[in-house]
Length: 254
Image (tube, rainbow, N blue to C red; front, side, top):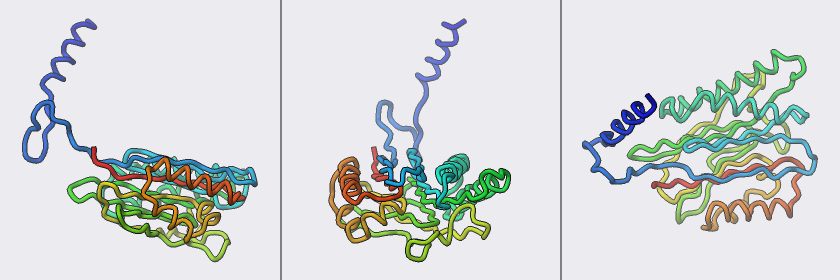
């Protein structure tokens, strides 16, 4: 029976072809596929209280930072990202509104978790997420709430921030997942070309290094891992009090 099933599978695989918009691909020809190649990490702050979480998938990168200033911060960030991943924003449409709806689902998940459990009354989290839409004209959709940041580093051009911070000075975020008020997300899109880079970071990075130094560091045309190592060196020198998470995502076509 096993041999019979294997024979059928091999037979099916032998006749499979990859179809493009203009017909069949010749056998043996590789299929071009666009994706995000990303590296990331969290530099632990000196206060020794975990608050950040992040996720990297082929077309999805996101970071969250628990923003209530409590021992439950990491829980809030984890709940936010879990709900976001479950909403599958890279597979639920290509509009900015589609991504916003997925982020709103994460907001409701954090809020509901706080309301259901008396032990977790103060769950609040920031969110920064990017989704790659390959297509014929590739672009990155992004959504942002809180004190983190998303930067676009076009190949051969100066890096630019895509988002603005949602807080006054170093205070609590005015927009965040889990707050009683309705979530007003900052959403947008940016076209990308092979070699472009998008960087997602929590406020620990921005606060420790500053916008001017970040611009200088992200302008260096090095590999993603080399860029991450350089940022880690700078963070080590700055000794941030809170967690500092950064994900560097390169747009490639392979």
